[in-house]
Image 1 (cartoon, rainbow, N blue to C red):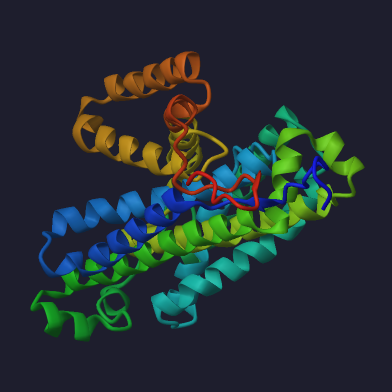
Image 2: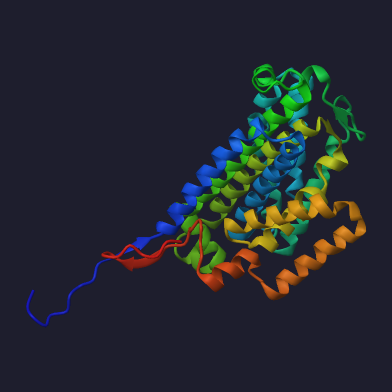
Length: 359
């Protein structure tokens, strides 16, 4: 190249960095620690963590649905209830092992999501939100008519089913515990696996080409359509995928509870309102946000739920305060102030010679 001629600088697209790799390594170590936790943890802690794990999985699903695909659903309790009722039907009526029924409940929820989408996808914005809620109420009324599953009062799993879950005898001998504690340990491992798989699924999706398209939809849907993104097909895929995961979570929830009723299984407060609270205070449109929000929600419910109406008032006050002073959520506030990202999904242009900053 001649002297004085401008040199071309090579650039590349980067997502991960040293900081994010360190965060991923720490996350793997935490998962290993959580996997062996039943060996020395008490039953109360195991039950609390089961709750934390399935709420986090539900929050990640809603975050993917609303924070990226722009589908503000207030009816995700439809798939929690579907998953729970399908598990009860497969175990009580078909005699299937509950653990084997959980993935089948996810498949069935995805199948139900297709005709549901044909209805609610005709709506936009607030109409979509209300429409998804109405559909969930329709499911509640329909399942209340099934007398074989208890009708409007619900039904319970018989001890012969809950005491013979796949692997329960091995857990009883390994940890020297009774049947109820062994069942909790199996539910704990199932919840941990489902939570970790959900996190991994969301992370992989957002780092893929489909994730890039979802980011474009989130930022500007009209511009994304102009660039050739098939918005309807992508939103449908996200809706069906999150329905499948939500159905599996619902099946696990009601395997742990061992009792189901239409009002509980299709509760908008328990399975949608609380999930929205988790995502909003943590930070919508980020992977880290629901993690922070789920931990905060767990601590609030663990120590303040006995205060009744004051507990709900505190939740509402906290949500309003966060939305006023940290509109991108607590993690969004930290990320903007300190430039920290543990699980990066955004693409950035960096010098080919440089490594870029982690996160």
